[in-house]
Length: 125
Image (cartoon, rainbow, N blue to C red; front, top):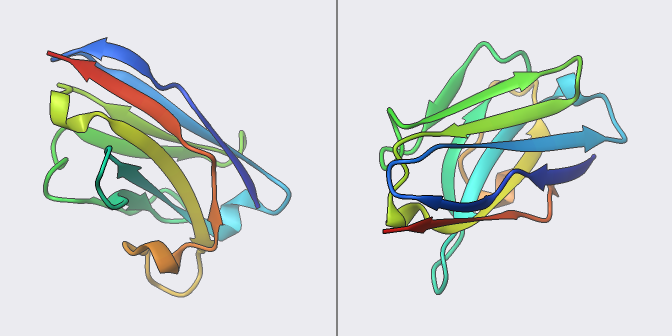
């Protein structure tokens, strides 16, 4: 699976962004999708994940209530809606894909086999 993330940019505190991750190369609906982020000087951390069907999703506690993951299997795209942005949300955001039929969405880096290149989100205070 080839993944291409987009939608990042510079936004003020309290603003919103919608990130996209377009997939190609394999059957997108066979894969659970995850979002991770990496702030400068930090390790890449889990943000959230969504099942192959879109019927289940879960989030890191730090973003719960502000971030929403959705997907459109007809468009081979997964989205990350980010609301009420904070300066600490500044990071490069990555999407990842993992096989979707093992009953686990994934929340660790090594559980995702495919990665996009990342898109930078900068939140100004």
